[in-house]
Image (cartoon, rainbow, N blue to C red; front, side, top):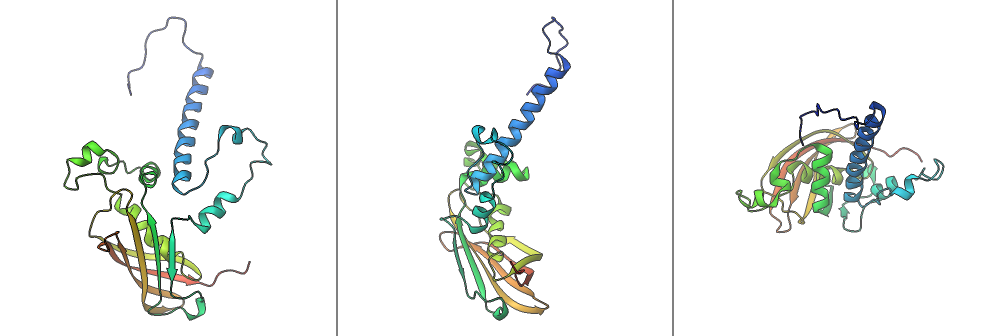
Length: 217
């Protein structure tokens, strides 16, 4: 994109108001595209042009939040207990999902991490990985997803991570979080790992969380 302003005034330059409107539309369109990419990565239908023209009453929709909360058909969850009161050392939760190309591109847009290793095949082919790989912090997000599925309301206090291997685009990963210590006051220390499709670990670490009882609905 050129950064040189035009000094030519041939009488056809747009009025200031028109120029500002054009810039505003460009910014709005860029925001909408980024937002739709994120929604697509989460399995939520993006808002279309026809949707945007509806009245304010018609566009108040709660389904996207519900869809994200309950998950996607490609996500698999397993946990040792459904009872918050019995939660203790040895209990675990596992969460599996494929790391799709849409996840990677959406994460790059949202986080600002546009490392070419994750986005450009031609560039990534010449690296030590021989192709594009997923962002490490994107993969680590599956640990947070697993912790969120403990019985109760999970609040992160800390997380240590060690990245031990790459994850290819399209690979399904599984995060497992196991309680190794009850710290009291609904606080727990957990061993957190993520493995790839070959069951080799790609992330190893430790988390400390609070798991409160769910509020009354």
